[in-house]
Length: 362
Image (tube, rainbow, N blue to C red; front, side, top):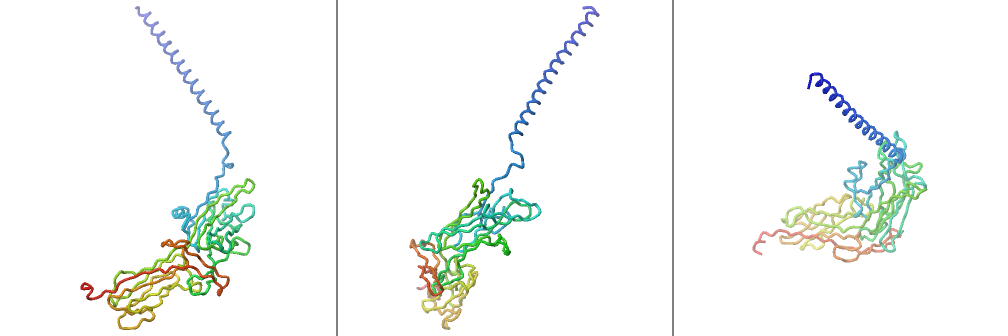
């Protein structure tokens, strides 16, 4: 090949290479353009079919908790729907961001008949006053400014009955109301949104008709019951000159002021079968009895002898429908403080031993 021929060959090779690259570039450009246009068309289709942010509204949600807290995490950590006390409190939280109308103030929900929050209680006790009771509207307030979370506390108020077997009806229980958000009232919903009468056992339901036109309602239910009390000594064995600590657990009477019902246990020994009456305070804090071998029983002093068994008896008049012994317990009712049907009761018993110096020989 001559020098001239070689130069022509190189020129042809270069132009062929350039043409090939141009074709590839054109092909790539065509593919890229097609892909880009397809993406635009797909995105447009999605945007056309997807609701706008203004149109999207999360469905309200409702939870119950035994914890009285406006913090969602703390509240949900104690979420529960069973085992509430007959005169207990059920805390209710509603997540409803669509009802966060004013970001500069605390909003309310459930205060009108059109979008009412309601509560009803079903009593399991036959013949109880108001087998089914219902209240609405009962308003809930927002937990804070611009949260979209609303909160209310429902109280079970019990019913009038003889709570301790003294023959006198405790008339401070019962009553129902739902006026926390009414004009002229100031009680916030986190303290009391509603109060309904309750009996031995049953269930409570809270509902919110947030969209009356489409009949959209959310609701939750929880059960409640009276519970069996427990009484115990702090030790199994005591010396004859020791002080004795008596523990009482009664979920149904804890927190009740003495003007509603006096809470007491009878403490006695083998040497003194009459013994002493031990009164418990509102919080049912443990009570002390002092043992003595020289003085008669009186007030907080209990006469004992070495080797005696000592006893603590507590009569529980607020029993669940069936006790731990399998026996069915019926609850009475009062029409006035002097006109009461007696309730069945169970005597809860605890025992302990007074040490004897010659016990190892006996």
